[in-house]
Amino acid sequence: MSGTRERIGVLGGTFDPPHIGHLLAAVNVRSALNLDRVLLVVTNEPWQKLGTREISPAEDRLAMVQAAVADLPGIEASDLEIVRGGPSFSVETLEALRSGQPDADLFLIVGADAAGALHTWERWEELADLATLVLVDRPGVQAGDPPERWPLERVEIPRVEVSSTDLRSRVVEGRPLDFLIPPAVATCIAERRLYGLADS
Ligand code: ATP
Ligand code: MG
Image (cartoon, rainbow, N blue to C red; front, side, top):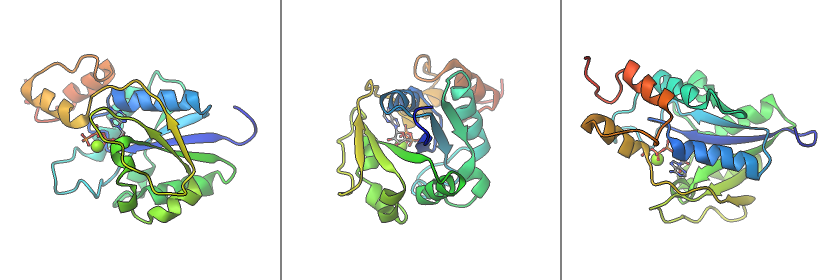
């Protein structure tokens, strides 16, 4: 650990499924900002996505994230929002982390697409008091402007044009998932018959 205060990164997501874009963000931000650990916080109810498409059960998405990070030191799956239940608001997650560890420094990691939409998040003005914002680029996405006066870091990560949306289509259409998700996540998808995989 560097210094006395623990430095914790938070990467929230639906992770339906998790992919190498998420993992590249987590490991590179951890390294660049010297974080002790990065939590992949699995959304319970992604309230902004509800009604737009079918969301896999939270326990399946958590299992996939656990499989994805099993061999990655310093990267952890978090069930905090699932245990809390209800709609998932990042502000409540950061508050919970802060009250559990008042001495930690928190870093909220978001991709370029999420950055421009931060002002639509619940109580977003309060987020700036809780965490430093960390922006990572995402190909094919115009980087939105984050709210002003928010402590901000930008971290360069390898740009891979991968999304959970594309991966779900790949499963449905039987196209390859190789090199886009860790093999353990592919196994998890097959075992749990996610994304409309028929029994065989
Ligand atoms: P979906 O297509 O279902 O929206 P997604 O691929 O965007 O899925 P999310 O779970 O919505 O994944 O994203 C969680 C976080 O990870 C967001 O902050 C998002 O910007 C970031 N992220 C996702 N994919 C990438 C990527 N390829 N590169 C950088 N950041 C990414
Ligand atoms: Mg997304």
